[in-house]
Image (cartoon, rainbow, N blue to C red; front, side, top):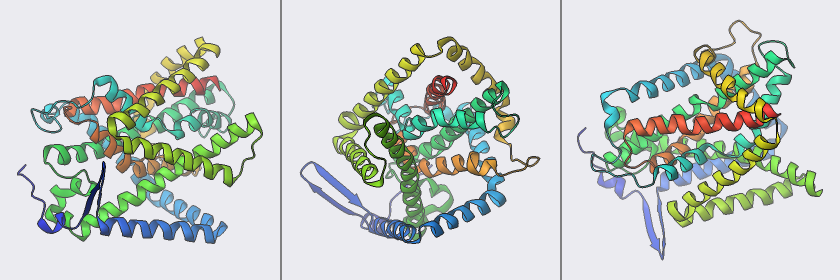
Length: 385
């Protein structure tokens, strides 16, 4: 591909300033319009209350009824594309050029890859989702051994290859144009082959605004689920009440910790926090594995993985055509939309930490490592539950 030149007016369209060790780089159109839309959405939602909830449910119902099949098809095609790309002639290309060297060790890279997806959602749904599907099995008799097997298959489907395929594609686009073509790490630059230099105008601004809004509300969903779980746990142990004030304090604390890691940078902040996250999660998982039904968990991991791989094609294209319908809108389609909303954020992160990796290394690492650890996590907590 020919070298891409950023127009002068685009370079002038950002505000850059450095104060001491801190530097900010703001695109006014994207920043202020995104902020205004987000604030407006929050204010209207709070003011409308139950009416807003009913409106969101109506929108969700309409989208899942008429476009649910499209979500399912696209997610499956993205996964097939990632697997196929590993075996093409382009798989040997490096993000950053032929002479690029990886910035992080393989272990450090794996830790950050897993931490990108090892979030509050997995802590919550690692137990909640298998139990929910076991008690309310959409494909057969509930509270049976068959329901237990199916509950793990469905949970693996929602947390397996499909979400990481969408992260991988978005991250690969950002990494290629950011490192190999020397463009800023931005969502709009992925669309250069289609839109050309128009990405530096209103169309590109629109793309970045959508990505910003999707990212914020995707993160808000995870944070909202997580703080309720943390608040419930603290209340159970200490008697502190479950209310919005306590949850607000928890959100402030989590946000402050995340901000600290960003300010400290990749090595001293994000990488360190990722490794701490892995260690704490590993200790918790080993505690449950050793003191729980160990043999049932170990044998269950093999069977759960085998059932998932065996039924992956049919589960990936299941659209409830011959069923009563309605279950997928609250689970599979919710997840697919959730992962798409997360993809700008996670894709940007995994692109940033994957400099110097070949496309084959990148795709196999992103698809296999987090998924394998996630399957172990889900089996330990899901089968124990």
